[in-house]
Image (cartoon, rainbow, N blue to C red; front, side):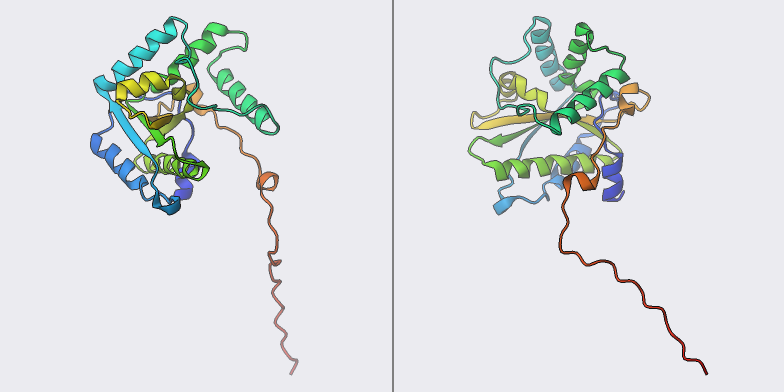
Length: 237
């Protein structure tokens, strides 16, 4: 699979099949993604991969907290979104509306929206849940490196016929996850990542987030116009 094919076929998968993913496949994806570039070769990513009973146990702990009305571990590990600003706020709004429309949940359907919120912490039914963390002393550049590693994992997953969903919402339950994973205090939980085989029959998986055209976000300067071929002139004889 070419990189362009992996990019074009990737989407945020919100419904997975229970088909197991072999440990060897997960190891190959995580190790392959380590070829990601990083400033100073810091390689600032830390990863935990859970499956089977281990994954189910953590999911059950968080589900119990949500059932009691607890939607966060008391404080934010970091702020996921900045204050509303265009064009970003509108993009997020349209994406959310498309997702809820696909699953038939109206804007005023509080229980339905809460149920969908809870699915984040069940990894949308994926058989593998990854947790990515970064050292708290790292700066913006290393956060960018972590994001590139995450993207590499997503693309390599496509090469293996798998799909993913990055779930920053797991940072809301960072204390629960950190305790369960025995994550060192100096590390900050960035996100979870669902990994598995997509349920392509699920309506929610037919949602494709819009992308802004190149002209909206890119400025190109200094390029020469394409040369126009000069017609070949043949002397009359």
